[in-house]
Image (tube, rainbow, N blue to C red; front, side, top):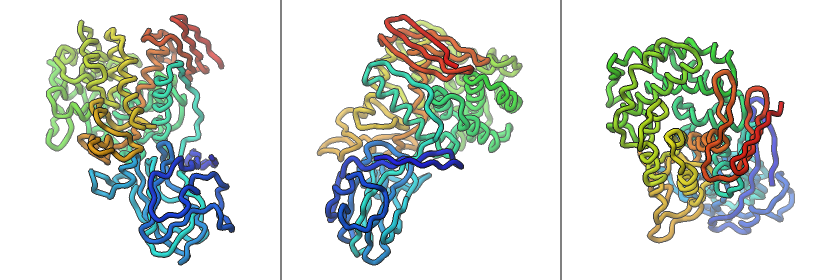
Length: 531
């Protein structure tokens, strides 16, 4: 059962989601009534209700997919007129049934474990987080009858324009899941990194999110809003998100957005700010290519590319290669002396050895071309992948001549799906698959809990986000290499698909001037622009 309404000020629509199952309950009569579709209103009749018998009675509901929002409780009776419930939301079943502090369960950024009041004959929407499961427990003594408990899913109103289908069921599921992940993160006119935790705009994390957003929805207000918000909060003499590389990422985001949309006006609006960033970065790079951002590495992240490479020997190699990649992209937009100097000075970093796949990937993206690079990236398949860096690793592998990207995608993103994912996660390691259960079930005896027992850095245990926009970049890669659509400066496009063992694919891509329809069948490519 679905009902829709729109909030024009925030440009969102809200979808009512009925639970698909009751995962657990205690002292609740007729709990299955909560699964029965009914009109969403307060009834006078007493039939068709679930009865919470008193303090400590609870129900645990599964809404079947990740949601961004809260729960809507339609209460028929509360014997004391007023009652109090504890609502615990979770992206996994374990999280929904965990107290704050258990295996790093938290209320950071959005409260997912809280008390709320419900009233006799009331219709109340409570909470705002990212979740799939909800545990509703009666805290007060007297019984309460409830007609329905819905999940309320908040979604952006802009319509989907881009589509990609392959006929391969697993790959198509990965494509759809990546798109849904990104769509959930488009909230309040922004692009959040996560919907439970990390409801922030991170300049680096934004890059794969912007690409996916543009391929799915075309030019939309959320992208320039996010870029302007970061600019307005960060003078050019400060580092974006307090990280030098994230200022470079902002410039890359500007170039990618304007390249994709052909929005030269937005580029002109921001070119001086982008140029100031690249001038500042260039000032910290010596003629021999060495970089000293003059930041205390114990307090700041002078060479931060991503968490797995943070404070490793690869960190400065990855940071320098990413900056070089950005300088090259800005030079595609216009001549810039600081970018030209960075292009020359930073070449030395392309010769360095790398331990991590994402660092070698950025070396390749920045211009490195050496035998054995594809073998390095494809060694042990999806081992060493991360959800943030998947787009760049896959793209670099294609540039280096590798041909195993589809297998890596299926192993890595399919691994999350095999554990019940309906959105892609902040991070994932294929080693987690060994002896681990699904997020929609409690772990069996001796089995690992894939949510609470894993994670690292700032996303350990249940703090780990299971809906993170940066994980959607795999969809952008498939548009660019499987479908073969690439956008160049000035809003022009090329279609040059890479043979990756997929016999057929068809898609629609929003490009400047219309919708580009592409169909591939056994190596034959057909393209057509529809105004």
